[in-house]
Amino acid sequence: MPEPGARGHSGSMSAVERSGPGTTDIPKDPEFSLVLGGPLYQLLRRIRLSDDALGVVHRRVIAAILITWAPPMALAALQGGLAGPGRTMPLIEDVEFHLRFLIVAPLLIIAELIVHLRMNPIVAQFRIRDLVRPGQWDRFDEAVAEAARGRNSIVIEAALLAVVYAAGILFTLRRYIAMGAGGWYALPEGGLSMAGFWLVFVSLPLLQFLFLRWYFRLFLWARLLWRISRLDLDLKATHPDKAGGLGFLGESVSAFVPIAAAQGAMFAGMMADRILFGRAKLTDFQIEVCGGAVVLLLVFTGPLMLFAARLARVKRSGLREYGALGQVYVRDFQQKWMSGAPADEPLVGSGDIQSLADLGNSYGNAEQMRFAPIQPASLLAFLAAFLAPILPLLLTMMSLEKLLGRLVGVVF
Figure 1 (cartoon, one colour):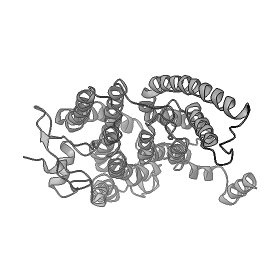
Figure 2 (cartoon, one colour; figure 1 turned 30 degrees about the horizontal axis):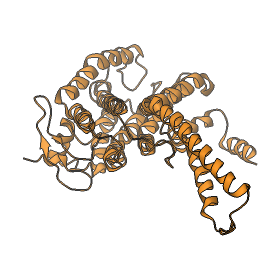
Figure 3 (cartoon, rainbow, N blue to C red; figure 1 turned 135 degrees about the vertical axis):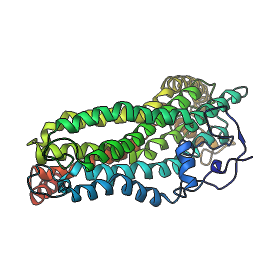
């Protein structure tokens, strides 16, 4: 029987195969989705918080806010921690809390739909463009099936939850108990309040699970690309995308932009609380912000670098081949036209000139070929998404009027 959840974004039903215990059905479809599968996805479908193609995303965002953000707000209000006197950090002023569950969690949920829509056709491009040489397609299909098994694994999602509750809660519980009784999450006499318990045992574990699941998906993506990079691929140095024909893989960086924004919002919340309540300054976090940006870029673009060695070989080979072809053509062109033009063939309108120009363009494409299918514009968009939530913290160092004045001065 076809699996209802295996329908692609185009709405067509795929044939499926059983993959053994511990997994849900895997679609055998030319399009591979990094996110369309797994036990949580199946659960969300059954309770009508998702459709077959991760639609109705607003329902999942509202549900996440009602589970993670609303209960601590209500419990803190009942116990005097919302904006009560005597609190060094009332909940209403806890920027990190609000950013985590009103911005970060929704971004991680919305990212699923964006990644599905933008990356769903990517793997299919290898077949559409016939990039895998004959005799290698079985290995290609097995690599895709392996990634689908990991994505759909019940065991792996259960293990991620176990990690969150076994390690994450112990660390989080000690942290909030050690922070003392002045925060909204604690009782005046010590210990966690009901709002604090909900934060430690429900809200934060769910957020941590969303992050862990995203990074596991990124691992699956990296392993899939690693296995594909080891196949015999038909890449061309003169391809106009200047990536040997793999330029379409660069779309994955743009698809991950919401996750970069979520990470930036996490950084912004952490820094905001320390600036507002811990007497820190924005300049104290320069290393953390720069280091975080570099690590994120490496993590999310690293899988594309797996093709670097292959593309470098294709570039060297292409330059040699087109260099040799150019030598032959230029020699014949010079002999024909520079040593006395043919009387019966006019120079104006001759195809030889255009052929020489086309050959030069082909060599130029090979010369400009990149060692990874990464577009600079995608890198800038990814970096901007990470930094955007942090930029408002500049207002803790100067007024908005002064900040705008400096920006205008930089531009003009």
